[in-house]
Image: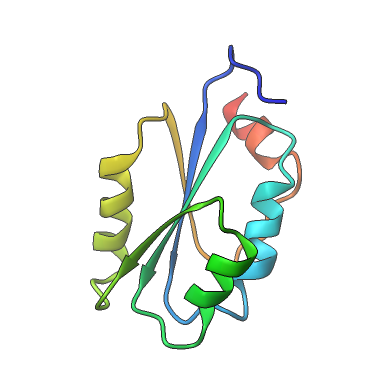
Length: 107
């Protein structure tokens, strides 16, 4: 259960044809001991089925679908404009976090 007294962390992951890596990455974010966590995936017009997979496996996360590849930095900037959390973690889709990573990072 999220602790309302703790600051939230906005985790944003930019993807482009990342179906090979994104399952492990997102699972590691979901398994974090620290809460609250807000998760957003920004897709850069993937054609490998990753968007469909995300919609089916993680329908509760925020998914921003771009119709063309705007580039890594621009995609992250889209999410940064939306975030209202005091902490933001910019994460690559091939990263897997240890379960206490956010807890230690915020501390």
